[in-house]
Amino acid sequence: MKFEMWSIWHFVLMLAPIVAILILYFSLRKTSYKTRYIVGVVIGCISLGILIMRNIDIFVNNGFDPEIIPLQVCHFGNIMVFISLVFRSKIATSISWTLNLIAAYASLVFADSLENYTTMASIRAQAYIWGHIFIVLGALYAVLLKIVRIDFKSYLSGIGVLVLLLIPAIILNSYFNDVLGYSINYFYIYNSDGVPFEFLYIGERAKYGWFTINWTYTILVVLIFLVLMYLIYLIQKLFYLKDKDYKTESVYHEWRRKRKLAKAG
Image (cartoon, rainbow, N blue to C red; front, top):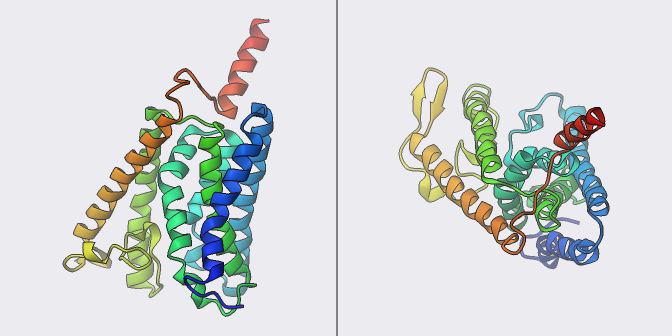
């Protein structure tokens, strides 16, 4: 079967993570934190497993390919969901909630990339479908089921991590595209392919030896996402208006706390 945009299957694809999170939310919201956490671990492991399966398939069929490097927003999104739900990381949850969630759901809505596959049964096509579904599901699950509560410090730390990833992404975009002739668009920052940002691509790419960059487009895309990420961060705060003292701790901090208590005892 070949995928068609705006077909019944496309609408099923868009609704899938929403239906899944509603079922999980109403089924688990009154259960113990431990139960909710265990379900989250399963979601996180599946999220990472999908990315691993995809990359193994690419490597087996093509050898090394820049697509394997998890600098695409949704590819490292699978990793962030895993770290968020398994290790209860506030920083990873901040990234998956404020950035990966919106990018992954946009990829389900604007899923024209799926039309390039001759069959939906291929590993790459299935990885695209389930990979994005589990990013949306995992990001929503961590916040709605209150597995991890994001604070402002974690939000800023998440921005810092993204800046550290953005720098090599910009450099590698130019190297793989301009030097090696690939078609790579890490962070959607090389050009507007795959995102509705054509109106932001103003002027020409500046050239510095082999390295090229469109400064206007890059800066505008970053600013837009920073604004969107902050607004989405604020949405999370609304869930705690009646429970302002609710706190969560990472697996590491829980281990340290228990270790101190054991020593004191």
